[in-house]
Length: 82
Image 1 (cartoon, rainbow, N blue to C red):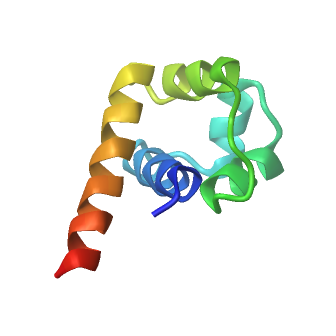
Image 2 (image 1 turned 90 degrees about the horizontal axis):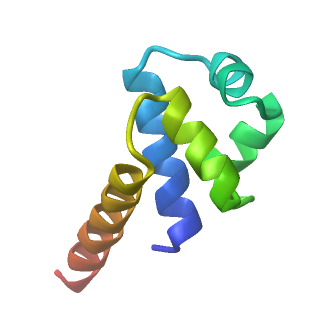
């Protein structure tokens, strides 16, 4: 699994767990709603600055987001091997 796909899936999951729409997350993180959509679909990748804004809006450390992305990639890799 590509990192951009994994990050998008983690972002979508965290956003939904927080009960936020893409628009609400975008407003809080001060980014465009369509940019959130593009990130969630793995089309775009956030800059470090945007990563921190998204993490802050979701009340989670940016490092924890990256741990979740790495875990998702590892799980996908393990699933491909079996």
